[in-house]
Image 1 (tube, one colour):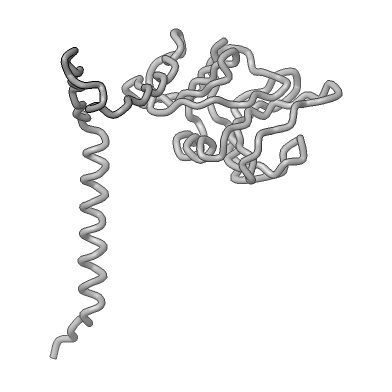
Image 2 (image 1 turned 180 degrees about the vertical axis):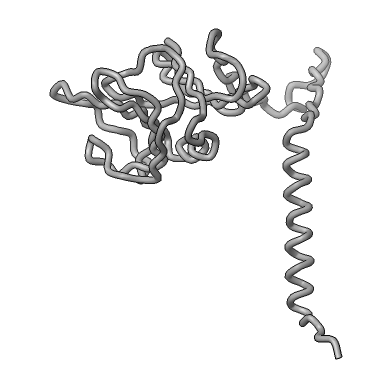
Length: 188
């Protein structure tokens, strides 16, 4: 006599399969074209009281700097204090501001050489998502975020610090995006 699977095993299997299909469809939808709605301008004869107040548009994200290379990469602009995550097609998928350390890397092409999940930073703050990519003035340069999400205190007393600190959610995004060997383009 053949053994029957209990009903909970069937339900679990079907639920897992359905979840996998939904995730796959969501990923496909996210990579496809996104429709935009046309906004109708009110006619001059329309009553002002009939229209709700409009909210200002969010400012457009800063454009990816020229000369930052091609292909999948992390782009760090020292002057703009900003990072872009660029996909294989050359499109910036995310950009965010950063707090640079007191030592900045020279413009050039680098790659992630070491990733460490968490440690204590040179400023004494517990940090995570540490991604080293070069050295300048004898100081290691790395992206990281504070474990508690705080911004770094300014370096005092001539301290040389090479940490490029990120907001917590940006640190998690960068960690997911960049493996060891991921290219890093540093621009002015």
